[in-house]
Length: 455
Image (cartoon, rainbow, N blue to C red; front, side):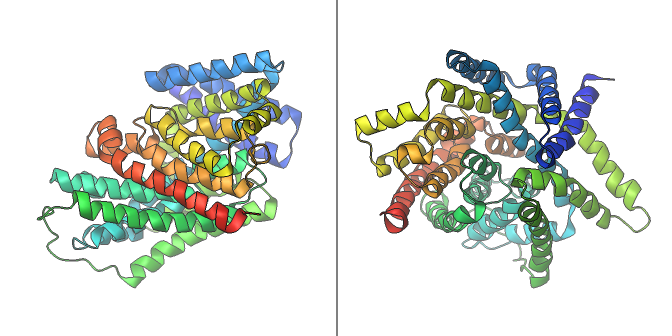
């Protein structure tokens, strides 16, 4: 058995065991799932890109030292790895959806129609298409839609389309139920439900559309804007209807499982995602060949690429261990005393959280690190702001912070798609619009605090 095959086998065995542990929380099942997580990390950490590997090791070591100083070293490591397993299940489920999304005739027709819109309304159409597809399909939608930028010859138009796609994708981080941002924050702040924050996040995403569209028209659009489409391809109602049916069906199944069985959304997606993807890809294949040309190639590809989840596994396991470990050394009661001593108001804390996440991401730290750290040592009752408000603050910051991090999955994906270095996309292309959006997010959350959460 090769190293890849062993890693894939460990991960694929781990996922159903993690799901099982949420139905039957037996200590033995939990111990087995944590042991498999450690085995996967041990096999794959050496193949993680150097920067991400080094950052992961450093923050995990800091978390371990903090846990040891706090007197609970093994407990913190165990708890951190167990928290990270939820996200590893979610990444696995999303991986299954990529192939059927990319090959779906309905979604491809929607993509082609979006890019064939005339200049002036092309940006909002692309933004909306990316936003709502990715809110359910996550990176599977990005795989489908990045082709719009990849195929452009004009570099200015390619840049504009890339930013529009990234803005639409990142904005869905503030409310998309299948986004890792929502999964992380609902896990970190368990007293908040998705329905509590989704309306606020959806309104915030509408404002970011206006910001992005205005920025594109004022600073990026030129005359001419590159080769105009030879003809506008109308977006037919049947195309929208079919795409909406697919997205709605997946959302209903996952959220229904979440509500009925009381499972966390990542676990519900892990239960529904793989079989949904298999049926979806089989329906795209000719009758009589749905297994050999549909399901079997998909399963075979998943078995080959599961080890590619090493980057996400290292980042989220390290961040979880770091957050839990630091909480052992800096208990919330101590942080509360400092906050009271410094006389920090709720508005100041909100702004610091949002800007802090963006600055940390700009230098290469994944936003999950700060989210887990804040939730462990500065829970809502300690810092004196309502839980939904803290959640929407971090969700709003998550999207912009992934755009300006040269090491985020979003930036790295777009870098490969358009063959532009990730630091150019993050620091030159996206930094100005992300800075404007981050400031607006801070103003929006402060306004929400005074409108709806003030005593």
